[in-house]
Structure formats: C-alpha cells, structure tokens
Image 1 (tube, rainbow, N blue to C red):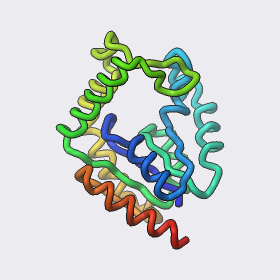
Image 2: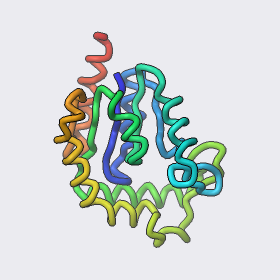
Image 3: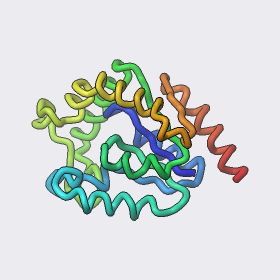
Image 4: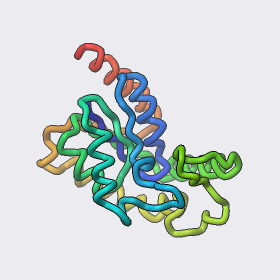
Length: 183
C-alpha cells in the first residue's frame, strides 16, 4: 500500500497520515520534513534535485504514506502510489485547524522538524507564505487542482478517496487497515 494524502494547508494531512501509518503499519513520509532545511531553506525551490532524491529514497519501499502538496513530490509519487486521499474539508474547518495549530506551535516554541531549528514565530503570521495566509489564499485554487487530479485518466490506477468531513477519516482508516491486514 502506497498512499498520498493531499488537502489544503492546515487540513490535517500530517495528523491523518500518522494515524493511517500506525493503523496500516506503513512508513510515514512527511514531505514538509524533507523540504524544510535549517533556516527555513525551501529545498523544493532552492535545490529541487536534492528534494527529489530525498523523496525517492523515502518512498523506495512498498509500504508508505506521504502527506504534502508539493507539485514536484506529487509528480514523483502519484505514478507509483496505490491510493490517493483528499482531505476536502470546508474552509471554516481548515482555517480553524491552521490557526489553532499555528498558535499552539508559536506558544510551545517546538521545533517543527527535528534538527532544523525551524519554529513557528508570531512575527511571520502576516507573511504571504505563512500557513494561515497560504491556506486562505490557496484554498479555492487547491480545490480546483485536486478535482482535476481526481478526474485525470493518467491516475486511473489509484484508489481515490475524497473525504468531505473529518469524521469520514476514521471510517476510511479502519477500512484500509482491514484491507492491509488481509494482504
């Protein structure tokens, strides 16, 4: 089982992927952790060859789940994935989640990806690339992109799951875990 989890920034992709990985005994590959180097260096923009190599190495096996929306990552992952899961939640759900997550991270000062030193800072909240603004600004565009992905005939090999509500996630995880135990 090779699963890609997509959705708006802040929708809960990483949390969902971690739960799915645990339930199905899959390696969890957090694409943000591969992308963000120390000092908020964006590998997908500054060193795409390295970013690509890290993705390929992390997903070389047969049992993994990824979470992330990076165009380069999806171009590498979707052809070899078996499942595509879209967390297609309402904007209100996404925004509540991204604001809550950002606030918790800023208050705790937790390092987001071990070894990077990258932490949430209140001073960046108004920056165009901050997750809160990014989630708001890209929500409609992402939805159109994901609808197109779900209709793309080149991805007919994928089992596709579009989850309109967070409560749908538990049912899907249980079903995929049961399927995984049979294989």
